[in-house]
Structures are given as C-alpha cells and as structure tokens.
Length: 466
Image (cartoon, rainbow, N blue to C red; front, side, top):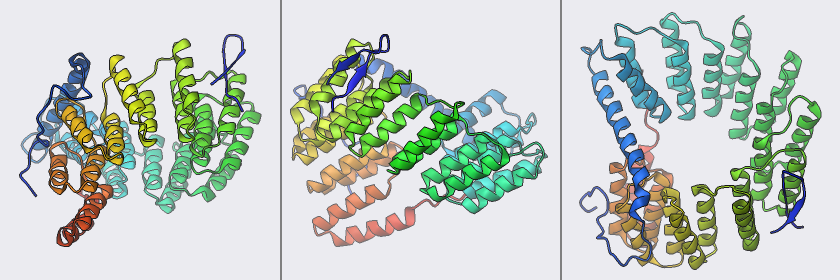
C-alpha cells in the first residue's frame, strides 16, 4: 500500500514515497578527523551550557546554606529561583534541602502551589515516602490540601506502583467538599495505570468516572489511547479512538494522530500507519514535524529507506523544518542497518544545516562504529565530544563503555566510568552490566564480582528525611 501525503489546502493526494581520574578521557585532537564540527555551530550551545552551569552553581550555593540554621533572611528571589530550577531539573534531593531552607526564612508564607510542584517532581522521581512526609509537613504548616495537591499525591503513588495508596487518596478526596476528584485527577490515575501496565484498572476507573458523571476529556482519551498503543493492545486502542470520535465532544487532535501511527509504526504495521495517516488528515488534523519523524522511524524499522527519503523530501517541499530529532532518527536507522556511509552523509548534512549534534547523535555514531568494528572511528567521535560543549548523559556513557568493553579496552572503559561522576551522570544497571560482561570476557572475575556488589549496594539508596 502506498502512503498518501495529503495537501491540507485541497486534500489532493501526493503518492510517495582503575587508572587516574581525568575530567574526561584525554584524547588529543587531530586536524584530519573524518568528522569535524564547525566552530560556528558551538556558539548557541555555549550559551546554553553557560546557563546550565549558572543554574547548578546557584542551586549549590543555596543548598550549602540549607545545612546551617543562621541563614534565615536570605534574598527571596535567589532562594525561590534556586528551588524552581531544582524542581525543573527533577533534582529532588536539592529541591527538598532548598525547601527546608525556604521554610526557615522570616518572610516565608506557606503556599499550596509550592507543595503541588514539589509533589509532581517527587512523582517523576518515584519518591512516595518523601511525598508522604511532604504532605504531613504541609498540614503542619496549617495548609488545607487543594485538589492540585491531592492530584499530585495520587500521581506520586500511582507512578510508584502504589495503587492502593493512590485509590485511597482518591477516596479521601471524595470526602473533602472542595477537593472532589475531577477529570484531571482520573486522567493522572489512568496515566499511572498505563505506565505500570495495569490495564485491568483502566476500565474500572472509566466506569467510576461515568458513575460520578465525570466526562472524559480529550486528554483522558489520549492517555488511554497512548497507553494501549504502547502496550500493543491495538484493538482496545482503536475501540477507544472510536468512542472518542463518537462522543462528539472530544475530537482527536495531533497528539491522538501521533500516538496511533506511532503505536502501529513501533510494531512494524506499515499499512496501518499509512491508513491512519490518511484518515486523520481527512478529519482535518494536519501532521506536524513529530508526525513525520514517526513516519521516518516507522519506515526505517522495516528497511523502507526510499520512503524515508520521500518523507524528508516532502517535509522540505512543504516547509516543515527537520529538527535534530529528525536527523537523529535517520542517523540511528542507517547506523543500525550498518550503512556507515549513509549515516555519515546525514551527519554531515545535519551539521551543514547548522544543527549541533547532541548526546543522542554521538551515541548512535558510537554504537554503529562499534558494531561494525570501527573502533578508530569511535576514538574520532570521542575527540569531537571532548572538544565540544555537548551535555552528556548516562545513555551516552553506557554506549561508549559498552563499545570499549566489547573491544577489550578495559582501561578506557574504566576511565569513562570514572568520568561519569565529573559529568554528573549516575551509572545505572546497564552501565554495570556492560562492565561486568567486559571483565568476565577478559577473565577478570574478581573485578566482575566487586562490581556486582557495587551495583547491588548503589541502587536508589536515597531516602533522606525532609
């Protein structure tokens, strides 16, 4: 079946388509590297890095003062901005320390909105115990919980898989006159069920909403559709979409569009992707850049590279600007296919368009070179990373640690592991598993055992009291 890209203007169809610890592993740069980054591309990223460093310095400065009782009349702007930055960055330990400092200030006035923001952050960080303590502190501050606070608490418990507590919180809300659970509360609860793959509860929640006279919103429908789609429950997903359309009050939107074709794309059902792509446009919903990124990724999964190119051409003709995400998808696709030449072509094209490679880009390059046995090119990528100001993350380190580990370069692997701390990247189970595998492959059984112990003791050992 051919994909039809529909022109929104007239709906005509267009057929297509254990050494010392360095700040970072020191590797000297070479002028003859096969892949280089133009200096002009680093200008905007330097500003972003500078902003990040300023934010981190401000948080640390305020956090240091939080450990002392003598700082009780600080500049409100500095404290509140540091708290806001910590919350936005999901730095829950720093946020709680700064919040403690905030409560010591002479000018402090408790606000429910602050507690709601903190609870939402704790939900993202899966910290239910901290959330329970925070809720108690809020009550000790003389504040009555609002519907936003209760809903955030429901989210904390739900995202942590504590559904008994989540449902008890909803029941508690029903007994408070001004805090009856609303459509947003139930939408959050449904999202938690989907995240935890507790699809058996979604029907129960929808039935309770109907009993209470609470109508589903577009967000509710989209949450259910997205959850079913990601779990591969396509019949339930399409039934929910049909109910959404037939409701007459909640029409599908671009999020619905992208969720449905994304679900089918991930399962390699290209005919379904193309069929729904046409149907959503006939409903009057225009695709966005994310839609085209999903199409490109879907075609890439099944090796339909010509159609990938057709989508990119269409985007260019219709003035849809490809993003770093678009190019990362293409680079990853060709890298996984072992087509190094095409991968490098798109990498260079991306840079010529003024896009700065990010951690995901470099990770795809390293993975492709490593799989193809081109370790010298992995070294080239690492030189680029060292000479750039790209913000690295744990997945990137996992990728390069795995690459050097598989190649038997244990020394380089350990250097990178130690460098993670300098880059504020926390090792995860993938990090440890890659290193243990490398040690075992080299016959270093004692080192492997030590790392296994470290992995078990590291865990998520953060249960600081507020």
